[in-house]
Length: 356
Image 1 (tube, rainbow, N blue to C red):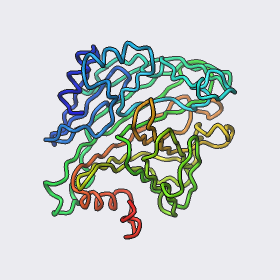
Image 2: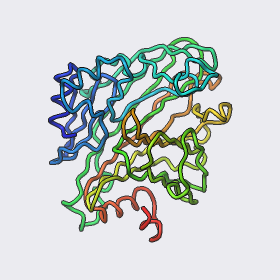
Image 3: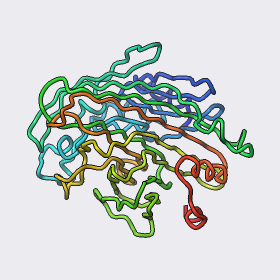
Image 4: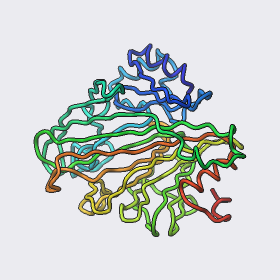
């Protein structure tokens, strides 16, 4: 969805946006309702790198969408709180999917915009019940987004100059427990159009854990250097990768024909930290640092790049954490994106490159 139509639809639905302009002409579009980055646009390009809900294509549809009482999955880059088993299953230990519920105080929440050194900061204060551990926590979430320069600005192949468009940002997020007791962690989820390939670099071979769904062997490749997943199946499917192997970056490539897009998230992984999110079948096992989720059903058609921050509270000795990540997004010829993928996500042999 293009920049002009997206901003007009949201404005017409009473959900105004806030644009951040980068020095290179790229645009980052904040949606305070839901506390998310709803759009990322390269200079001279009105095509969003992110998936947004089809209801946002018109103001009338957007108004109905936000008034409907269902989960407002607007799209883009959002922040949730883990662990999912504690917060999203009010009938725990009953894990029937029909009982899954996104707490509205978390998403969309009630974010307000504060100014911090000339940049907008999104702030939310909320309380969450922890259904598995029988606790309750009061929290404060703060998010600040600023432009991020192209990491390849000094290294890009001259042959790609002028053919690849770029946009990016840095996101600083903090989480504080202000009352109550429980173990919780920051959880960042980035939604892109469905049907592409996820690449999760690893330091060593790490078999991903399946959270739900089923993934054909032909769609999932695990090596000593990466987990690669072709995310094109119907239904909902999710995997996780443990912190000990995760390299701290993940990327998603999609597009048809010779023109494609590549979105990469750069984040910190701490194998010494306590990660809170784990599959329902292994609720007491250490959690995963990186996750990927493929959805093509009534909820929408998108692919999610997700990562977690080590938990605070619940015996960790910490009541506050701060996380900084970067998003680097590129659009252009596939051959050029192959070179960028190799530089930022690791080298690939020719056989793997052909398969991706």
